[in-house]
Amino acid sequence: MNQTASKATSNYAMTATFYMLGAQAVFAVVNFTYDVLTNPWNPMLEGEKLTSSSTVFWQYLIATVFVLPLVFKIGLDKLKTRHPMLHEVRALSSALGAQVFVFGFASGVPVWQMIGLLLTGPFFVLIGSVLFLGERLTPTRIAMSVLAFIGAILIVGVGTGSFTAASLLPVAAAMLWSITTVISKYLSREESAETLTLYLVLLIAINHAIIGTALVLLALVLPEGTLPATLTGGVDFGFPSGNAMWWILFLAFITAISQYLLWSAYKLADAAYLQPFDDLKLPINVLLGWILLSQVPTAWFWPGATLIVGASLYMAWREAK
Image (cartoon, rainbow, N blue to C red; front, side):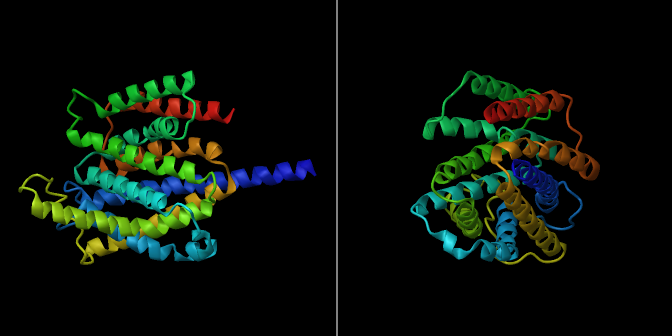
């Protein structure tokens, strides 16, 4: 009996691993498509580029339509909650993180720098968990956070030609997404993964529309030149035309696939088991950016990425023990 249960658990873990690996591969294609649609130096989309806010608005609006089968599979009865405002703050921080992240691509930050610095996210989650959830700050957590911080400095390349102010955008995105994660950890104490998934899926596009509208209003109120040029357009509520339309539809479709794969993985296995596989986004994205966009990392990227990934893996291993 125990042998049968052990074999079933092993099969679930293996299936979850394949889902997680698939999700990371699809996320790499998502990031490549961001670059095509928003980066003014990317030649793969002729004509005027989309603003970062328009890109993520249409991406998540259409992706929501694609994931409706998942919504009905989970069941709308799972929307029952005692914390509607926390779900909204969680969705808003997730949407803001996406806006900042895609703005990084629109600002010309190379994909290797974007993803390398995004891996600092678990350490912002650690800080938030200690401050707001009462978790312990152990010597291991402190040491690994310091190592990850050193790695981030190396990847940013402060004092070198690879560093610009825009290089800090993926760090800001990691901070915003860590807010979503910390709130999710708090809500998961009494709410199911299905409830958390449903609220994020259904609220994310609405929040992107709110952010885009706010950018339009700010552009009207603030003196000209206050906002970066790629943000002053806010959301263009006219659907993209030409080749951009097909790229947006493709982006929304693969976003829906990535969300389904990710949800399936976490449904079958614990987050502690799956966390190390999340770091695979780094080599996959760097390789794709290298082959398709000719974005070659600097020499300092590799030791910096090794420190961040190594610290993350070691901390995940210690936490599991």
